[in-house]
Every structure is written in C-alpha cells, then in structure tokens.
Amino acid sequence: MQDAFLKSAVGFFVVWLLAAAQVSAQGLPEFTGLIEKSSPAVVKISTVERVRGRSQQQQQMPQQMPDIFRELFEPRRRPERDVRSMGSGFILSGDGYVVTNNHVIDNADEVVVRLIDRREYIAEVIGTDPRSDLALLKIDATDLPTLGFAEPDSLRVGQWVVAIGSPFGLDYSASAGIVSALGRSIPSARSETYVPFIQTDVAINPGNSGGPLFDLDGQVVGINSQIYTRGGGSIGLSFAIPSGVAQDVIAQLKEKGRVDRGWLGVVIQPVDKDLASSFGLDRPTGALINQVESGGPADEAGVRVGDVILGFGDADVLTSSDLPHLVGRTPPGTDVTLRVVREGSERELTVTVGTLAVDETASTREPGQRPDGTDRLGLVVEPVDERNLRRWQLEGGVLIRQVRPASPAAQASLMPGDVIVQIGYNEIDSVEAYEMLLAELPEDTLLPIRFFRNGRPAFRTITIPAED
Image (cartoon, rainbow, N blue to C red; front, side, top):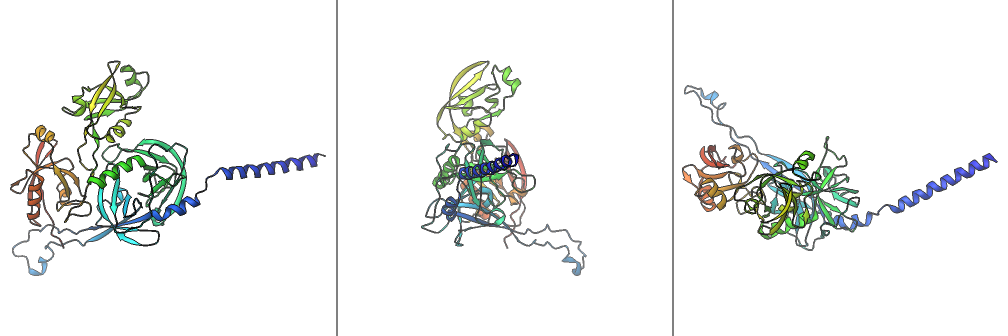
C-alpha cells in the first residue's frame, strides 16, 4: 500500500514538473522570426586609421663629425602604420544612410560597411555627434533593407529586447535579455550626461557598438553604445542610446551636419538628505544650482545660486541628472517654465533656452579634410560667438570645436574651447581668414600660435609634418 502511494506521488510530481516546464517554455518569446527579418539591415563596420610617421627632431652635429657617423644624427621618419577597428551599425534608408556609434568611426581614414550578403561599400561620414556617441554614414547603394525606430518612451523595464551585431568580429550574432532600467546617466569623458541610457542585461561585447537593440516587434528601441566590465567582456550591464535621442540627433546631422542642444548656463549638483532638509524639502530631490553663468538664459530668467529646480516644463526633475537630459533635447529659443524652490517656497520662472556651444559636437567633412572633418592642424573650428567676444574682449578669432588625437594641434596642447587669434605673424579674425592662412602654412616649420583659454592668452608652437 505504501509502495503504491509512493509510486503515485512520484508519478504526480513528474507530471507536474513536465507541465510546469511546458508552461514555462510557452511563456518565453520566440526570436527566430525577428532575427531572420532584421539581420539583413544590420551591417558590420570596419575602419582603418593611418597613423602617419613623424620626423625626429634634427640633432645638432659637431662641425668635424666624420661623414660615416653623420647619418646617425640625421632625422628619421617613423613608418606609417594602420590601426584597425570594428563595430556594428544598421541601415536607416533604402538609399544608403547608416547609423553607428561615433567612437566606432572616430579618427578613421577609411570606413567600410559590409552587408550580410557580403557586399562591401566605402562609407562617407555625413556627420558625427560625440556628445551622444552617434554618427551618420552614407553608402552608394539603393534598394537596401532597412530598420525603423520604435516610438519614443514606448519601452518599459522588464521588457524583452534583442541585440544583433558583430561581437569580437563574429558577424551577425544575436543575443537577448530584458530592460534592466531606463534613464541611466553615464558621464562621458567630459563629465557630460546628455543621454538617458537604456540599461539591459543583454550580452554586449566589443564589436556590438553601434548595432541595434530591438523590441519584439522588430523596431529599434536603442543603439548599443557602452558596456560595464572589469575584464573586457559582458557581465550583464550594457547601455544603449534611446530611439528618441537617436532620431533627433540623426535628423539634425542629416539636415545641417551638426546638433543644436538646449543650454541654461548653470552648474548643478545632487541634493542629498541634509541639503534637502536645509532647503525646506521633504525628501532629496531636484537639481541644486551652485553656479549661474552671468548673462546666460538662467541668469536672465532670474535663477539664483541655491535654487533647487524641481520641474522643467511638464517634466519632474527627480535627480540632478534628469536636468541635462531635458534641457539638451529642448530646441534653442523655446520658452520653458522652471519650477524651483527658493528659501523654502516654491515658485515658477520662465526661461528662454539658449544654444549649447558647439564645442565637440557634430563634424562634417569638407573637400580636403580628413574623414573626421579635421584640417591640417587636426582641428575643427567655428566662429566665436558674440557673447564670448564680449566676455573675453576679443576682436575676432576662431573657436576650436574638436581636436584630433596625435595631431599637430594636440601636440601643441590645444583643446576644445580655445580661441586661436594668431598663427605665425598673422592675426586671425574669422574662419575665412583662418582657412586662407592654413592653406599657406609651410610644413616642418616651427610656428608660434597664440590663443585664449578661459579668457587668458597663451603662446605655443606648432609644426605641420610633411606628408609622405
């Protein structure tokens, strides 16, 4: 009797396990159709950066140096070498527009886009935006498969997502997971937080950068950009640029080759428990203003140091990192209501959002420039706006927007935000004057360059190496 009962119990338990497994399996999503349909519009991107050799400095030789030893002191040119990199991307339109990460193609001399059917194209860089880590490319092709973006703000935590890319060069690999969090602020190298990243546990590795992140409808909800890792591989923390941010940046790059972002002219910090209590808040929330730029939009709107911003337009500012996301995506010139707490009382201020200085944002390529848009000195420059001309009491100059690593400008320690006013004995009062002078500068000649940094003048020397 006891044996019969035991057998019956075991049998029931086995049946229960099988039923539970079947129910569990039925609850999992099916990815095969999505992957088969979407993969043809995903591309592999390979880049080549040609690091040009530079001549060693001439060493002074004794006058009586025998000829047999003289060649030991003569300058030598280091050989040119190719630095290769890879990433992923996807096709936005049938006529060949492709999106990827800026860091995938940054400084590249050649960008090759390869499709799943192994067709390859040399891509043109239409524009880049380092602040969002996005780049727009164009290949000479038609009737291409394409992907579409999901509606902004349609994503939810816990939702299934799929990534397709080329991790470690393994073409068109797929991985899946869930959305772990939304609106993550990951500071850039310049401590900027203009992208509210999507956090997932999808396995993302080097080579996935720039590839699409899909929802189960096959729509692109994000562009894979970063991973958090201690050893170089995936540990279940990956971050993607949301579709809403990507659509805005791509549209601006396609239309005007740059990205205009909103600007308030404030420095902010988080509000902790003690600060919240001291400012009359019932909990730590908002963005605390600890500096207001004179003459900026916030200053003109009456924002003061010590104000705590709790709302920007219709959106709540729960943490200080929320504010850059909201301001950056607001078109310059827009009037926005700020909800602030000042001396324990809540009030509203109206601010006209300004334009964030185009410091290291978009770069477009002109004839004679490198694919990253930089010139002979390794710079992307623009006119100095009237506000900085007045603030620094300048009559002209050019503002450095981007500096190419290892370029002559980088060797001279120039930085984004510097204003060049003189090269050699020639003063520079406009971008046109700078470009005319640049075409005439001699190679392998030490030249003085004068610039302003944060309003302070400085001299350096700069040399343009001879091309091979």
